[in-house]
Length: 173
Image 1 (cartoon, rainbow, N blue to C red):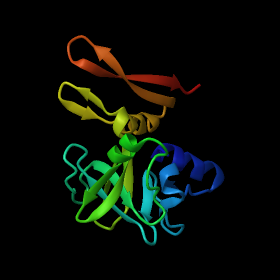
Image 2: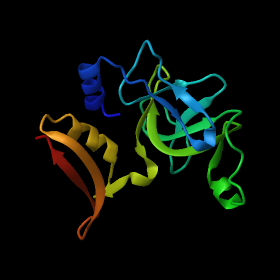
Image 3: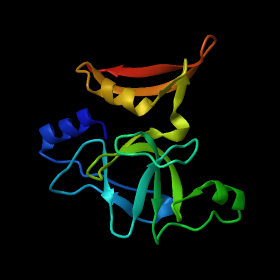
Image 4: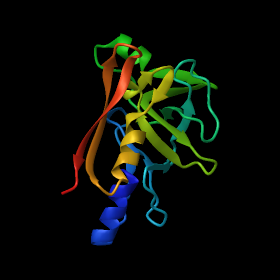
């Protein structure tokens, strides 16, 4: 939920947007946003019996607070494997410090207080001129512009750099 959209929801209806996070592979929510402290762009804190951390997608090294990497999750309700797809299951997990974590392919960070944030999806990252660009971050900035109603950022082929960023924008009427 872009911060600008959450603010509009609050302004129009007096509602705080409470976000939770989980995946099909986790069966249920793994992170929840506390009702008394809602934040935009925030996944929540890891729930009871869940271990979650951020790691470098390239070498699976654990990252510290506010460092952007892949969100990893471990817990008793995490699935064990993809049915009849052992090679996919093998790629879906990584072992760190003796704990087997599920690789979410979601990119985010955790702050000093243990609050998790999502930046984008690993598969949506755009590499342009040596820079890593996360479409969701650019979309969030665009959603904050007073004359933009909707925005979608995608990768576009570029002869010089291989890939560049393209934004599709719907102006407010």
